[in-house]
Length: 290
Image (cartoon, rainbow, N blue to C red; front, side, top):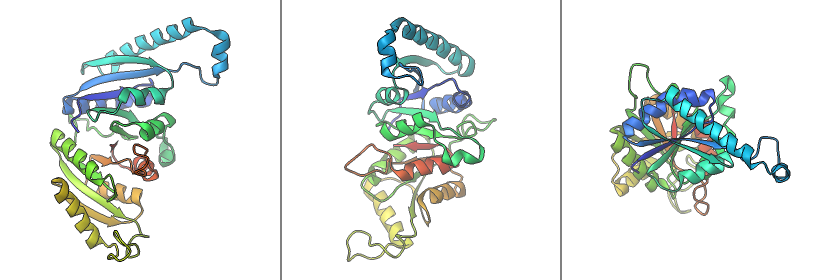
């Protein structure tokens, strides 16, 4: 994974404004191209396709697109003027347009903040962000902490990346992509796996006659995966609920970015699993879903 373009969807909310310093710093750190993207909904909220069928007001839609284009240009000049960027305005469903624009290239990364409101942050994930995380085929970086992930006196504090894997069908690919990103950013890499309580000492590793899962056997499985992929990383294994364990490990190692895979079923690749959403909600730092 060699990120060449950062796509920053903007809805002109405070969350978009607050994320600008992080997006700018990350784009510079990656030495990537920046694209500011806004989607004009083809149907006003609360309306149905029949409403537009009866009005046929294409001129109104074109006017809203021009207004959005002007607003996007003003946004760029006011909040992120020091990073050259392309501007793109699309029309349609916001999540669908963002996913289509992101495409399937691992060289393009979508960066968008999640919704976060005080003590209820862990229960809230913006619907557009959730859909993009679920459907996107390119890497998506998100989190409710983007405004706090950059130190006021530093360009961008990115020293440690933690790759959280499930020792499943996508582990090798997630490790490789994490290593490539760590190399591009010049950061340390930590590979983590959380053993859930139901696994510990109860379930076999692979076959019914195999040894029970334990911290030692899991550490060996993690090291085998690193050796198999040629990824240099520190191994960390702990026991607990997956999302809480990942959050605890990130805090313990003072991690600046967590990388996870989709975690869904292999027969449905590209669909984010339930652990992924929980990790994003609980993580103390931004999360990159590959």
